[in-house]
Image (tube, rainbow, N blue to C red):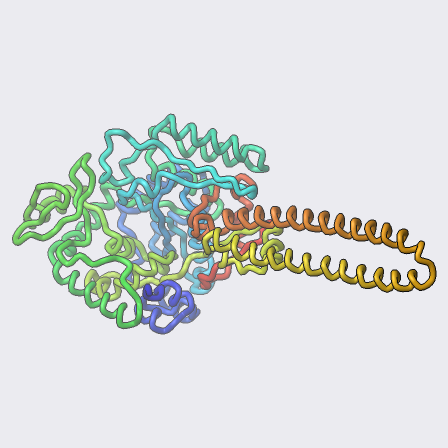
Length: 539
């Protein structure tokens, strides 16, 4: 049996989980205290970072509120609420929208509670090299027809290059846009959203730039700041962290090992496997991509290549060419809070796991502990789906079961209904036969010539009952066919491939149907500091 989820325990506010991560985000006094502490410790951003933020955000849709948020950061009197995500095709899964909404609303709530200016920031995870994870998305509609989209990778690109260096291929990107238009072009907001998609996703543009363009346009009114860490000024600022990660790699490994023991003692498992012989960063070899380093005596082996490099050479490269390095999943939160006055991080389940491994490591790198607040989790339902679920007697979570098992449950219920129908009609036949038999006895005693007429009447009555049974059985079969069709639609819409809807489908269909109003629909259901899945009945 797998260990219980740290994320679920944290959302349920179990003390063992809160102790591992650091702060009880649900307590208003704790939230106010963290905001005050962070403002004192780390409220002034480096000038080069402010300039880079302004440069990156100048390419996005105009937003006076975003400009005001950037000014507040430059003035040094503001906090940030941060979330981040891989830069998936057409914004990737639906939960990307939920993250962006969570970060903007939480920034507002914390500002109201603390009285300290707080701005939302979305971190583009552009340094990952798992291209297959970002190069596809699934679009659907209520008819439960699926459109799988992906673009063609650059033929010359190494599988190890970070997505920052991945460019959208023109022909396949244009084809994907045409497929979306053909499938969803009839929906109310198709023209507006199609224009945003087409302006953002163009051949020759990088995945992070396309992602930032679309998300920035959708959240311009909220003033969401977008940040791509893969920039020369940023890499220069974080050189001290790379140096410390290299120079104290063995000590960091020991700290992570002890954190893993704490997790297991509390009944959880590590989100990231600790590699005792590797530092918390990747090394880049030009067009070949980024590689993990393994210690081999006095040198470091570049994993996947027959190359070695000394600690001294790495130190020189960190100092002179820091873009040759990029963060791991465990170093990224530390970099984030080294650069920004992070009051809170809006985390998905995996990210909550990262934070559960980092308490003592954060102290080692001398960065503060922000609040870790679970993101909004949504499940979008058509009104009729709720009625179907009631008819089936299913809880939504049961739809995660294999379709064959669900069909078996339905078939069992239907067969019971058919058995009941056979019983009802058999009883009706028996009742008729009993009544006619009594009449026959009476007729024999009075006038035997009536028996022939009685027999003809008997045949007619039984024939009519048999006809009714046939019609009833046919109606049952038609209803059963509809039931199975509805079951398949529910399954495909809410738990496709056994996955949560928000992890499998993109937000594209919902944006084409509701436009930016989708944010308002979700906002009405947002419960601050909850993390529980919210079921939204769509209008």
